[in-house]
Length: 290
Ligand SMILES: [Zn+2]
Image (cartoon, rainbow, N blue to C red; front, side):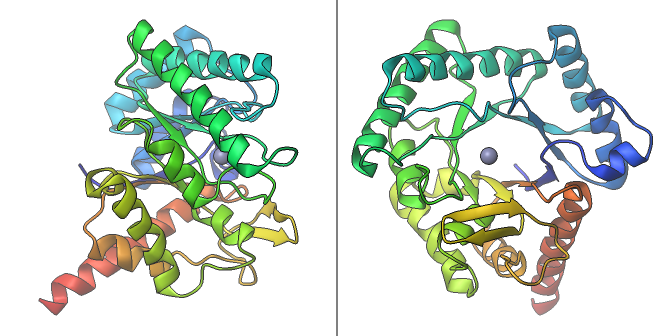
């Protein structure tokens, strides 16, 4: 297992180079030296089976790992049972297309914690994930990982602790640590190296090293205000952060092999490459130190 880097969705540069179809992303990413691609189903699973299959074939050919970002309107913690059951259905739609594509990770937002207590929201979300796992087993998708994501707005379910609690349900659940989101919901709490290390230590302590080693990650700089996340920025931002450098050091030190998906606004491919270069630099320095 190796660390992987790639964009969430299609970058401006990909479009500017004249490409129109996501099917061309694997070849494009291989050419610039990246190794992962998160396909966006955030507005629904709209890709045909035929295209999903072709995307998967290209990904295999160019050595690109595929993950899927599930629908934004999933609400695992909704007060309404009907909405929770629908959310199971949305996850299953992602699973089915993931199988066709050869993707083995589905990133999922937990939903709101605005109108009920966080504890009730968490219990509801757990129950919904349990249902999704049972359904996945019955349809033969036990090998596809659901990856609950840490969220950027304070009224959303998805603190680090909440994501860890959700992942405790089953060993196949992998946390998606969105560092930009965690930085936004803590008003810039991710600056010092120990703040990053604390996150990784918490995952290790509660979920074990094996799961920490392969965690899924979103990384981008994100503007925030009193409610948390406002909007995604690019790596040119010097005001909000977080910076990737401290994380790069710790990931190498702990010998981890996460999948890093960059979600910069438009420059996600270029910024994913910057992240990869920062990791390479840390590794080179370590080897030199020996
Ligand atoms: Zn997300």
